[in-house]
Picture 1 (cartoon, rainbow, N blue to C red):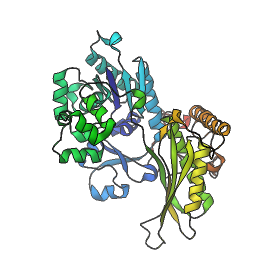
Picture 2 (spheres, one colour):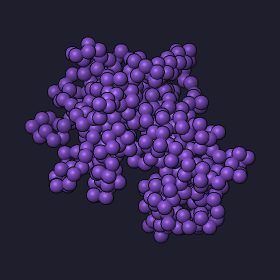
Picture 3 (cartoon, rainbow, N blue to C red):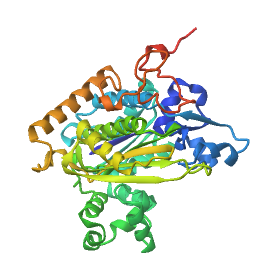
Picture 4 (cartoon, rainbow, N blue to C red):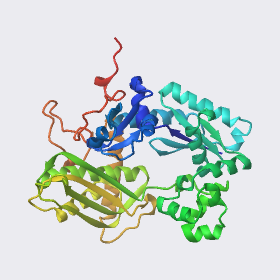
Length: 432
């Protein structure tokens, strides 16, 4: 059996832990530079606030409604996630952290055959809430895809007491009949549209297709999803879907005009993409840099440019990804424009253990050194704080107050951000 533990409305829940006044209120968390809505409380969803809504439209779309907006605080969210995961790690023999708010726990039959897994799941959810303040929903089933389905029901219906178990054929059939095919893990939006057009609307309808039709329409990956919904465990943890494309982009608080200003931002974005590659044990084959002007400034010249670099061999180190991103920047940069947004995209990802070398690539010894250097930097930054070690090309101008280089997290607009309650001694809560 597998238990999928999912933090409910993760970003909003992190904020509510330290600001209980937000409980029961409509709350939204904004993207970097306070651009648009990326997370919503159930109350905000009930008001009809859509994900991706630009922040400046929030007041005009919902006049008279009390909606609390907060700037994103990823340092806080990451630390709270780590606290939740440490509790889960102590509760099961094996854990696979799938994302910042989700983890799979393996429940071997040899250890859990005499355990009431429903009671175990309810107790675990209550323990996580009591010890960290974070609400979680738990789905338990014989396959990972069914566990994802069960977790959705645990989150949606209070009667499950935060834990839903699909462990019989009757429960499997009933759950899949109520579950939209578009919400099935592993079925993309376009595939769901094709299935719905063919009259396949529920997950149960999907399981009633014959295996060969599924394989032809959705390849082997879709067939595995079909088998998992039938209760056959066939997706190994190490083969769970990875992001095929990773993007880091920002809108700038002020418009940039020089290559040096853009290079600092692009270097930071590239290093972030490389870090995310290492987190999911992947390498990228392509690096794309894009820059664009402010489309709302009709009085200024407009342009949107991008360029892609094909790497001689897949890479995951900061120096290799950043060097490619800067070469792409030099190719697409034009004078006479004021740039408002930029970003880096890495794509064509492959598993990190499938590296193929090329005589056109960086010498293998140097490539290995770059990778080791990046992994060491990851450990130092995890221990001492983000950007304790970083590439020189990503260094920003010093903060006039502290004299230290401005960090990535402080280089963006965050006028509504909450304090770093758990990671900065200056923001620790004081009880008077």
